[in-house]
Length: 268
Image (cartoon, rainbow, N blue to C red; front, side, top):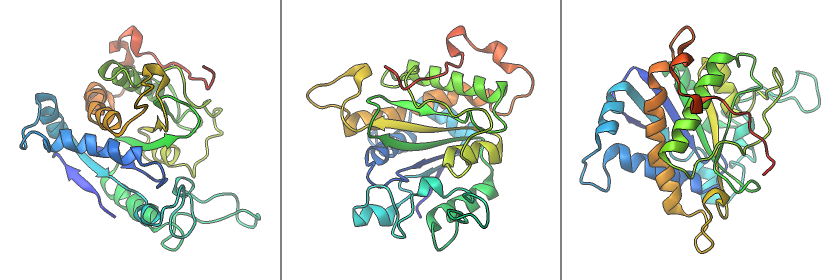
């Protein structure tokens, strides 16, 4: 597994991509993010915000969580036939028909290795980058169903998403998956597991396969170039929420009105 570490800050930011190998836009997103962090298209020069964030964060970036599935041409599974985004915790109860232990070296070595490393470093903010076949928008899915969801995570997610949409209007706020009900979150899903395990801001980021209706482009649709730009602009949102990731008390009084959490819907 490839994990690229950049920065020397105390806050640990993990961003993983392409758990589902057919969602190739996720790896273009990673390319845009790494290009900005490392100055890959500017002879190593990086902008001021990026320099600042590299002092605040240690970024741990996995460009491709499913390399064997990618090389085999799989859509959603690894070489063992497992959907990695259902491998982050045991599923069901022992003795039940559909019970299985996860992650394991045999079923899901990719998740096993990455989660072990996360346990070593800790996680303060996390993104799991995907593509969605149905909703024609860029959007975030949060941890509303997790047992630790409350005002702190709600306000962090609201501020992060609002800042992201200000930095890049290809990211929008109102349309996303219907949130899980309180206490009913699936803990085998990656972002839920990380949100609960590390009590941190953790989201799944989805991009469309065809066009992005919030900024439609009938000729090119949602393209690799736009995915790269969306990846680069996530740094603006990470900079905005950094001071509050582990802040105690009602820190959200410092947020703007437009930073409020908006409960999304699949209806558009």
